[in-house]
Amino acid sequence: MVEELSPQCSAKGCRASAAWQLLWNNPKLHDPQYRKTWLACADHRVSLGAFLEARSFLREVTPFVSADDASIS
Ligand SMILES: [Zn+2]
View 1 (cartoon, rainbow, N blue to C red):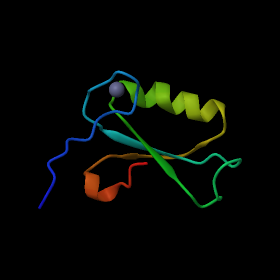
View 2 (cartoon, rainbow, N blue to C red; view 1 turned 135 degrees about the vertical axis):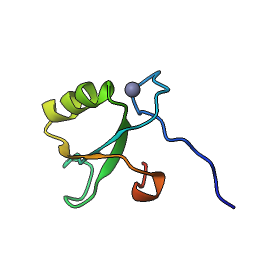
View 3 (cartoon, rainbow, N blue to C red; view 1 turned 30 degrees about the horizontal axis):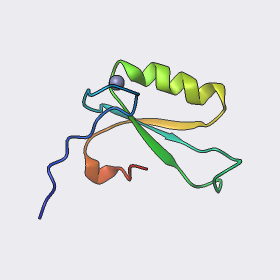
View 4 (cartoon, protein in one colour; view 1 turned 120 degrees about the vertical axis):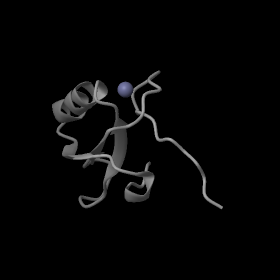
């Protein structure tokens, strides 16, 4: 059985479809190779990215293609 999820932006209160995934790591909490994933719509890619960048957590931003490519956590 396939779940029909339409992945949404991780920004608070935003229901837009995800267009980007932001991969990040908090060195105080995570192993160095571990990646948390936030999804972002086009509008929130910059603000979510800036939030992570300001804390030196941001590792990579990639286009979000499908839920199969991401382990959302
Ligand atoms: Zn959004």
